[in-house]
Amino acid sequence: VDVTYHHFDSSRGVNASAADAVATKLHQVLCVSISKEDYAVISYGAFKVVECKTPQQRNGYDCGVFTLGFAEALSSPSEDGGITNAKEYREAVLQDWFEENGEHAKFALRLRERICGDIRELAARNK
Image (tube, rainbow, N blue to C red; front, side):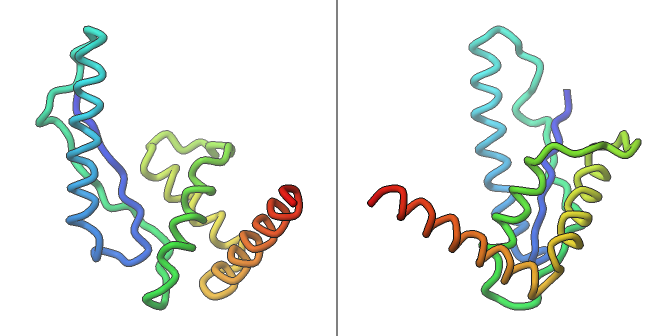
C-alpha cells in the first residue's frame, strides 16, 4: 500500500526538507508498529510527501500561530461537502477555516488573543 503524507506549510517550500525528514521517521515508526501486529501492509519505501495548498503567512514570525490554527482546523470535525479526495478535502477545510477566522493579520491576532485568554483562564483555575 502506498502512503501519502500531506504537508501544510504557511511558508511554501521553506520547510520541504524538514517535512521529508519527519515523514521518513514517522513512516519508519508506523511500519515497525504495523509489522509487530503482523499487518505488514506498508513497505518502508512506499511513501511520498505532497505539498498542499495552504494559506500563506506574510511575515517571518507567524509560523507557530499558523501551525496551531492549521492543526485546530484540520482536527475539527466538519462536513465533507461531497469531496472524496483527501488532499482536496483538507485544503478546502483549511481555506474555509482561515477565511472564517479573519485571514492573514486578523487570523494571527485573533488566535493569539484566544490563546492568551485560554492561558489566563487556566492560570485562574490553578491559583
